[in-house]
Length: 250
Image (cartoon, rainbow, N blue to C red; front, side, top):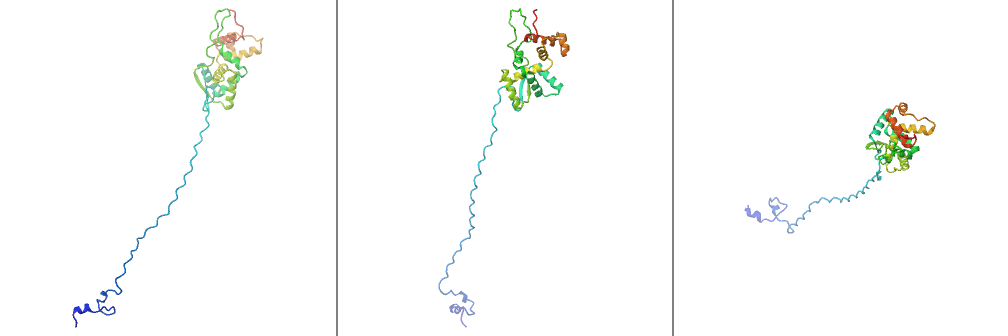
C-alpha cells in the first residue's frame, strides 16, 4: 500500500475513480480569457420634431372711429343733448306728461311747428318782448341778449339718422348749423303751451290768415286761451314788436 504522496505523484486519469483527478490542469495550455459582455444600453428615443409655430393672430379690428360732433343737438351714444331755459324745461315736462309723450316726440312736433317759418321764428326769438315807444330817443334794448327759450338746463332726445339729417338742414336754414340745439330750444318755446310765445304764434297765424279779424284785448285773449292777464299782455306786446298788431302812440 503506497503512501499519501504516491497519490499526488500519480498521473491524472480523468476516467478513474481518483477523487483528485479533476484537479489536474487542462491540456492544451492556459484557459482562454473571458470576453466581457457589454452592458445593455436602452435605445435613445426618436427625436421629437419641433412644434410648428402657431400662426400669429391678426389684431382685432377696431370699430371705425367716428368723431364726436362738436355741437350739441347731434347724436352722441344714441342720444342728443340740447339746452333750454328753466321755464321751457318746466313746460316741456308738463306737456309731455299731460299728453303722455316722450321728449323726442315733443321735439319733433315743435320742429314741425316752425318748419315753414324758420327764419321768422329765429327773428322772433331775437326780438325783445317789450315795446319801445315810437317817440323815445333811445334805441330798443335786448336785441343782443340770448334767444328766447335757450338756457342752461340740459335735456335729451333720441333722433334717428334721418332725423339728424333733417335737423341739420333746418339748422342751416336758421343759420345755426353748428348749434342745432339752439333751434330746438326756440322751437319748443314757440310750440309748448303756457307762455305768451305759444299764444302769440297761434294768434299771429289767425290774424295773418284773416286781415279783417278783430284783435282781442287782454281780458278776451286770456279767456280765449285760458292764460293769465299777464301772459295775454305779453302776447300782445310781442305782436306789437313784430308789427302784427299796431303799436300804440301812447
